[in-house]
Length: 431
Image (cartoon, rainbow, N blue to C red; front, side):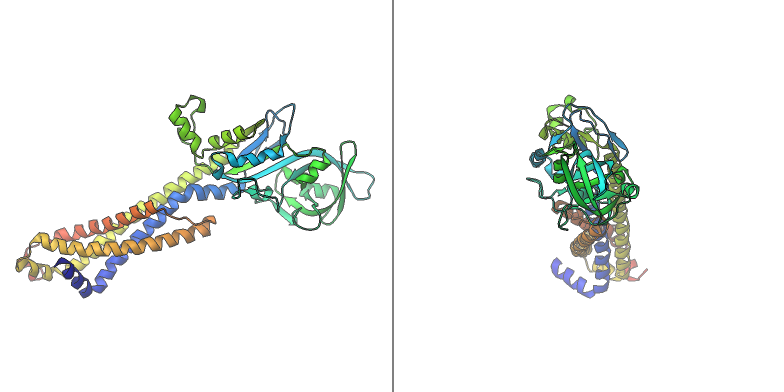
């Protein structure tokens, strides 16, 4: 009996029912959007920020590097200031390998630079690096390799070396190019050591970084190893990893953690946990977290997630009020009908069930449609803002759907309780 009454009631009041569904749909869509973005914020914001620099530096144990990143000096001293290049293939074996996003190894040295055919040259710092076309690391097909994966803001006028121009070529820092008066297309001669190794290469581009890299000459890593007579060796490697912000557990000393705490810390992509696992995998190295980069990323992630969560709560409250207002307006139009039902013997509980049934149907329809709309908006919004879709999980969708239906019932209950409490005689007179 009740289902037939619900169907007839909905058909008789299509516009009012559609308005109620729309109110719930909007609330469900906004909640889905906010939940999806809130839960995806750490990964999406972190990934976006980490496009602007690495957060881990790998150097030889006690190794000496006279360089800095993000204003952080990297200094050390060691008998063997080099790391084996093939050791990077072991990175795919760490437990948190999925957190890695970019790997860029370097080999630094000094060489004599002179224009091809010139008698005199200048001693300049040279750096071997991976450029475009570098093969992926073993077990890490998702990880970008080379300077473009870790330093996407580096700007090159011309082209990158090793991009299929016929030879590997070199990349001149903007300050070095100005000081030596070299430009794109010029042939340069590089000599290192006792002069036994000489390379003649073509300048393919001018590098602008607004940093110390502008005073260096870059060339393919393999060519640098030949030039410096250091086959298969590296002086430093920078990694970019997507990590979660440090909390109380992450700030504890791992050596003083309980077994359960250590296991949870080790399996969570904290910056310190990723650094420890990389260090365990690359013997003879020190892995130094670049805290200034990682901390700034974590703060932004937390604040962004808090902002979206707050907006989601506000949207829920606003939608609840909208549903209550819409339901109240519909019941005001039906006060004579409600009074008539009571006058012919319908109990208040039965009238309440009928009215709540209508709201429940509206909540289910509006909730489902809202999930589709919200998930679509989250995917598009994530692509536009972060470059990756913000997709809600099945659990999140179920929670939002339950909240949407509950929101409809709660908003309807606020109006229905008052409507069924009215005296039938008063309601029939339309007072």
